[in-house]
Length: 350
DNA sequence: AATTCGGGGCA
DNA sequence: TGCCCAGAATT
Image (cartoon, rainbow, N blue to C red; front, side, top):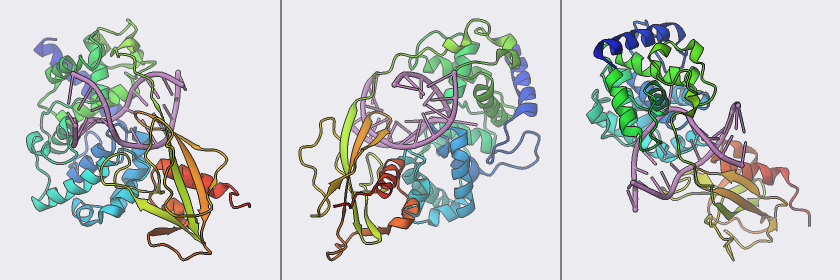
């Protein structure tokens, strides 16, 4: 695409965005005089990593209501942020979120260049470019999954992913303007989300169709991807130990699966069933009639839930949480499922 | 360069 | 059921 064609492309895209931009809680609408708040842009971009807009909205409201500024978030206890993040997934993001907020406050505010943003925890190539572009008006090249899909189709890139990433980024760079770079980036993402969709692309409504090499040539086949290996199966055990009205929780190790999160005591999750998983206490354990099935990024888990009550014995030290308030304990989805199952099952029938 | 990180919605 | 989603950190 020539330089002049790129200019026409940018005008067509921005003109469409001015009319069809999605209204999002963290977004300053096109044409507004208001300046985007770097804190809100950053927070939304972290939440949006591999997470759909619809899921992020509720969490974004919750976080910005409770912690309206990066200073407030920096002062929050890490455990409170983990609990608020529960259910959103990829919990290393929550750990990096707090670390990043504290570094930002320590240095007196968000840096306004892509290079400096890139040094902060949890901010990678995409997020650094997005914040620099959207919050600070820098002409950074913003490449997410939407942009990759749009570029693959615009330029009919037949190389399968992830080998095509370099070419796709180069094409994105060739189209990134100095004028309104943030709106340009958001326009490409909105285009990918609402028009240039993974399946059933709406080419008839596309503002840049005249520039697209794939329009009319089954655009849905791009970008090409290799087949994924099936997820292996793993098995584990979790324990629902009550002492009267309370249930025993643990805090998982800071790193690794569900790192730093509150959880039910649980075994490791292994491909072969553990011969003897060690329960958190000696008790008369009952296995719940059905396990919890859960799918993680790279394996499927069958979680056996064992239950017991030891209200007749002294209560061991530990993190005991009210059973009736368990929904507010900040459990990730796997253990929230297990807790719901335990509460819905009459397991103490002996 | 590959692997490890969650969870939900939808064709 | 498989695929995808405003990816980053680790190995």
